[in-house]
Image (cartoon, rainbow over all chains, first blue to last red; front, side, top):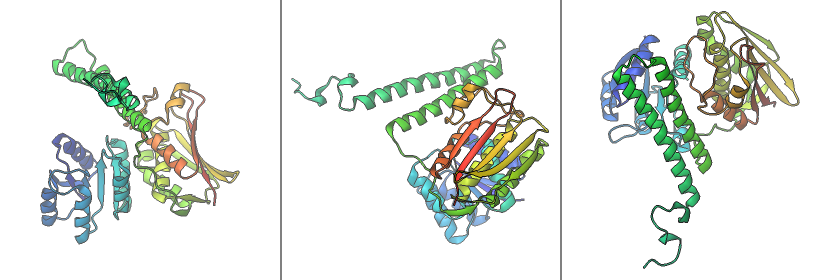
Length: 123
Length: 243
């Protein structure tokens, strides 16, 4: 069973992701509310996939956090973000093993991306 | 006493400001946004009161309509102001359509299986096209997903490819709910509210096909939709320049 870490500060939103992930057979290992919380959780247990926003509570944004995580382990990150700024999208596309979906999240599209991740171990 | 010039225009008179056009656009936007948010707040209020006279499904449909109207209005404003958003990447090189198409079918097989839908693949798909593989896959998967979502259990979906006039044309044809004339006009508009409904209650994101059309254009191609009407299935045609 693949383990997923959700990084999202809105509990209603993270709960919705959790439900969908669990329905698809993922194990949600936790929900971090900030970049710092995410780092601590990853240090304790490495997930197979991270789902997070670009804008996070705390000192780091999601892109910085993904770069730091990738310095230690190439964990795929699926960014779910409302931002469509070209520089953000390009930065995500430059990160190896990362993908993004634009908010509001179409749960069907999220399902497709996660199905592909399960089938191919990537996006 | 105020001096002459555009900066001395009375507060509240946007027509006299240097950015009158922008100001008008933002006022119209804010007005529309407030109306839609008012609608959403009304939905929340009525949900809290549990009034038996109010059909919950009507309320949810109304709320969803308001939310998508806000999203559509956002896109319209950003378009009007020429604000750049995450655009599709230009083609990264020549890739074989066949491999991407088969991978897209494999990725959507779970959906077809769930609705016991059969997919037939015909024609010439072994063609090199200028594309970025992930984006091409996004478009092909969206067309397959769309065909499945808007077709009943057990229906057939036909994927066909042929070359013509320096292009490869991929056709995705379904036997589903079809498109009314007004739906065809709106099917590639971001967050438009269409009459057609998925057959098993699958979510309708309402922006994917618009995004796909944008990607097709970035690849130098086209994406169009045809239908003989409601209940008569749909045909989506993706045209891409050949190597």
